[in-house]
Length: 164
Image (cartoon, rainbow, N blue to C red; front, side, top):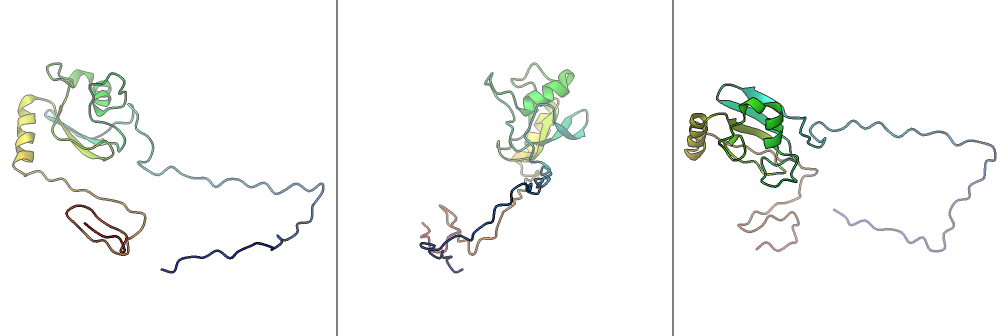
């Protein structure tokens, strides 16, 4: 890839523009931009339930929401979404009201399994512990790197960078 260069413009006069008195400039409407699906911010109202049985609820966790929180000021959590949508399914014997079978990071979206009773939680735990349940991750990238060199310490997208 060639580095780009900018031609110097010192001493170059800009092109002249004739004034047009009494003429309105054409109105330009900004382009209509549809929000990207899944890019709208999370709210306590937009819980997407993928599956529900007497033992489990599978929800589509949004990318910018915590699963649970002990902090009073955390208003947007899956814990709160579930409590508002399914108040009768909350278990007051658990700290969060629901038994989350696994974790997803704050910025990770995806399917989250919630057990509705102790026995179901135990079965789900065994599946994860025995590696019978799998997690798959998909990353969307803006561009393709020229060369990626893996290392035990870092990944470099810059082919001139020294990899540890």
